[in-house]
Image (tube, rainbow, N blue to C red):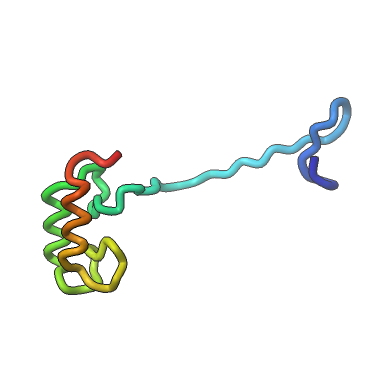
Length: 82
């Protein structure tokens, strides 16, 4: 399939190789889950409020300021992340 030394799906004595890709870590698709525990709840609200009016952890929308827009996003995802 690929050139010399790469993947080859030929039959017989042809050389075939496999590539293993390892990924360490978990992708958090629920950005409102600020503490990464799988639930948007009181701990996340605490983190958001403690960074109020800063560019800290609670800046969910990435606009450079933790404010009401971020609070709205957090509250709209309250509960289990899915």
